[in-house]
Image (tube, rainbow, N blue to C red; front, side, top):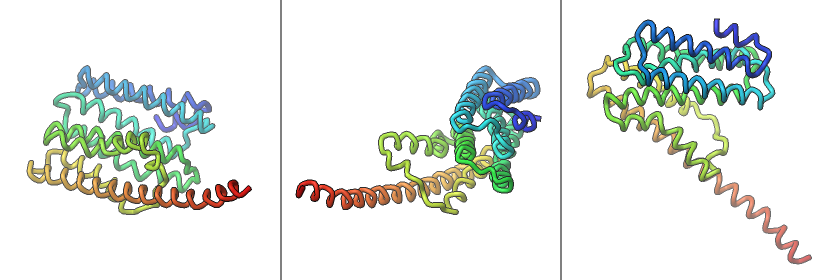
Length: 254
């Protein structure tokens, strides 16, 4: 129902509003069935407001009047992530339901990209939207795991946000990276391991080990990318220096 609503709108603002209504309905359903606390409601509403407001702004900026099928799938994942957020911030939330909703959201991650490629509707907005929802879902799951196994596990979800903050001070971190299949594998691994750990099926020792492996592989992936970006920035700087030197010499000679 949500997908058909958001794909038939003609205004960049109506689709996010429909999504916000769906977010409230999901929160209400969770409240009526399993119960979500005050902080869960607050977190869910704040998340939904930020999600839909930023999406409306992004659609307007991109000149898009409709989400399209692929972005609608991502929007559905985003709404489910709002439900996960509310349950993570609610003490004693049913583990089975939280894990199920998170697993569905993760499983849908491969659908939106397939839909975009099959329908020829791949956009930079869609790729960024997909990445941000993935990152936030991982953050929420890492907070859930951190509350149980140690707050160091939150570093799994915080890694990307620290990287973004660092890029404000070091703009060379914003340069595009070459595609790497291993980067996708590491990203997918985070979600799978966090869901398995959140399920409580693993003994404590194995759960901690899984979190350590997830954090270690993420550190390796980010470290490799940062090293590549730094080297690329040095190469660009050297090229600019070589290019500007003849011009300076010509200006002095003139």
